[in-house]
Length: 290
Ligand code: KMH
Ligand code: ZN
Image (cartoon, rainbow, N blue to C red; front, side, top):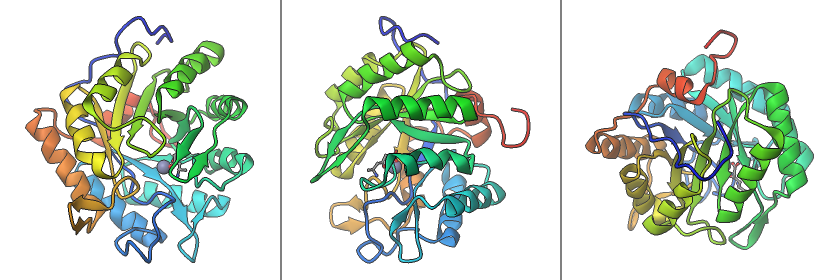
């Protein structure tokens, strides 16, 4: 892997990696009753999503009042429960909620997940600001390397791609040696979720990297279709959209994964198994060899 941007990113393999982001930190349970917020709900959702074609789960957790939390004990219990109940790659969010401190976000790695999100820059986030200054990005990346946790680079805007190149240039390759990115598109304040933007972003990614894309809200379908047509992978889930179609709320995360798996099948790049995803992302099975 090199951080040289003069080459195109690696072509995707024959299968499509589907990540499910089932909960997020923004939606309220009262407004979105189908949102999984308890550990039982999360594990049930995870099993359904694995059966529907997901290979990775991007996890935010909630407290007893269904508010977002980065409580270390809860995070550890969540990682364990997901490992016991599924084969999914467990990717904890280090983004948390916009109100979470940098220290709390770094401490997410104490739960020893397989993988974690790592956002490569600050971005306006609706009426809020999702803060990711360079020193924090560096510290978090250094910690992922120290702990052997594989990062997924979350890119909300083009400046984040430049920062990813800087990060790889300064600190070297990630744990596992493979760079995987997620283009998060359509956030109010970030890059728009359309085909032209996706194509330009993909062209700027580090050589040899793989990538997925997710479109927030109404950009979900355009981004999914653009990503498949460009050879990328997919992230879907109720973190990113709570509407399945105009006027029709999402009833479960599994239906979003099923729709993504059907689209991938149609593109003749069917959903990737968790084992194949571990191979692609260079993530060993927890407690064993890869
Ligand atoms: N909840 C957002 C403020 C991540 O998980 O790493 C940040 C986010 C990104 O969802
Ligand atoms: Zn997230």
